[in-house]
Image (cartoon, rainbow, N blue to C red; front, side):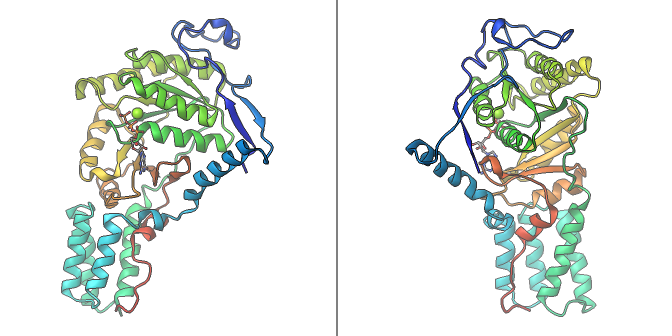
Length: 379
Ligand SMILES: Nc1nc2c(ncn2[C@@H]2O[C@H](COP(=O)(O)OP(=O)(O)OP(=O)(O)O)[C@@H](O)[C@H]2O)c(=O)[nH]1
Ligand SMILES: [Mg+2]
């Protein structure tokens, strides 16, 4: 139950150009960030004024209602979230239109998997196997075939369902990359919410210095989760923002630093160069940083996610994936294509826009959310 609310954000917490005196003293011997460019940080030292709001005041009731409204989607299951996906709807319709387990059913299943972004190779493998086994009369009914399909899909995700383990290295640096609009900043906000909930101390770095609104968007998430954001004016050097943030996170011995990056620069090669520079600069402070490079992919972009993964992997290295927007109209099958093609760990999926909607990737919940629930009379 939410007991405390932000009364207001710490004034000037992230305003550039604030006098250094407002910032708490760094640890002795720690590198000192440039006060002219890095805003003073509100961290353990009462970053936000909070106060208990008696539940009877109109403001408190308003807050409570907002809280309940925000919390409600979290209770929705994977199945509810994935029900609108092309995969789930397509599959449900195959089972309705083909009540009998015959060639037409299997052909249509294959078409359905392909159009749900699973990829031709995977779809063919899956259906060829089912066809062989159906020929051997292994399936008494469609329900038995569905169970076999479930097992096959699950097995394809077993190796990639690896949650992000935050190593005790302090600070654990997470660099978040991806093309524009995929959900990087939103994912960082949700991740901050999750990590704060686990009791970790963290810092966010507004490394997307290309878009003016990007800093503000990250700061909003920071305020919401009472997490400080290191930012400079837009147009600043992204690597230097993130470098400063790492210095600060180190001097304060914070658990995690999450760095946002641009999704678009003037040219795509410019973006990859900038990301490579961020890596180089971070390595000067900590050769192991970033400890995780999270590539965010938009689940609605289909096969394009494959070429994005290839590009980012080859240019800067990727250690984990986040697939967003799997609620709504995404087809969902892209997750299987990614698993087959790259075998990169899928850390999280985005099942909505709220803070609670970033879920640790759970292969069984995901597959069950895509498959028809009951077979009502088929078989
Ligand atoms: N439905 C849904 N929307 C999402 C999800 N994740 C992100 N979004 C929305 O996608 C839009 C873009 O998200 P951003 O976080 O701004 O994307 P970005 O990658 O930071 O974009 P740039 O900063 O332009 O590179 C926003 O409207 C988000 O609310 C999700 O899991 N589900
Ligand atoms: Mg962004």
